[in-house]
Every structure is written in C-alpha cells, then in structure tokens.
Image 1 (cartoon, rainbow, N blue to C red):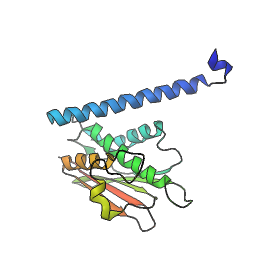
Image 2: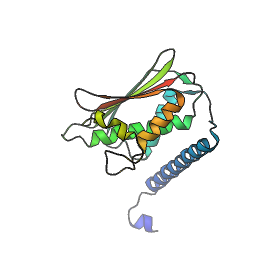
Image 3: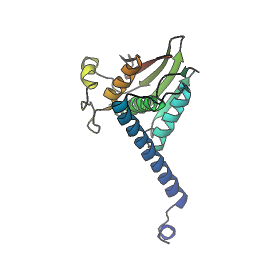
Length: 196
C-alpha cells in the first residue's frame, strides 16, 4: 500500500480526517443556525453552562490548529447557567474572539511568548467572559470601524468576527467591551444577561 511504503501514519491521517469532518459539521451547524435565525428569528434555546461552552469552543479551536504555539491560561470560575441563549451563538462568539486573541498574540512585534488568558465570572445578573491577549493591542480609536463588516486589521480575514460578535451580544441585551492592557495586548469582556 502507498501509505505503508511512503511512511504515512494511518492513525494520524484518520484522526486528522475525523477532526476535519467535525469542523465542517460545526461550521455547517453555525451557518444553518445563522440563516434560520435571520429568517425566522427563532432561537434554539436551552439552559447551558457557560464553562461547558468555553471548553467546547477551545476543543474546536484546538482541532483546527488555532491554538498551536499559544500558551493558554484558563480561569473559569463561573458555574453560571445561561437560560435564553442559543448555544451555537455563544460558541460562534467565543471562537471568533478567542481566534482573534490568538492571532494578536502570535503577531506581536517582539519575541514574547504568545499568551491568551480566558476567565469567566458571574454575579446575580450577568455571566462574563474576559479574553486577553498579549499582542500589540487594539487601536481603540478605530474600534467602531473594526466592528463593521469586512473591516479588519488583519490581511488574512474577511473582517466578520467582531461584527458577528457584536450582533450576537446586542441580541442578548449584553455588552462587548474592549480594553487596552498597560503591558500590551487587549482584553475583550463579554457580559451576557443570565436571563434574557
């Protein structure tokens, strides 16, 4: 067989194909959810634990290679259950924001290790997720433009991540806040009402 003669690792190939299939299925699920919501304005709501969605989003990003060469610090303390949100919307939001943080950390202009920190916390009214990177930082004066479709500070993206994130969070009555960090990088905090 060709795979045996050429030194291919059959198990690794099968594992990579399985991950690829899962990514395609997840992307199709997100696209279906987005289209159906824009047409019907119906949400597939179910109570979900915030930390479970964080872990699922990180597994997707890991399988896609997005977390390669990233030191990840995870401090998820919130056991908050989100009641009236679509799980896929939360995943889509986190995948976009964590992916942006990974890109920013990798592109830092000096030789600092790429670092992304994810924290979750809650109070009686809101569950929050803070995603921090150690990149060069976001230009806060250009933030409104970055939240417009097809505007990006990166050459390899379509510029849809932040507009979609803002649309999702606004739909919940939550907030999306950006803060430039003193030591470099950006923290994006998402606040989600526990009852929407």
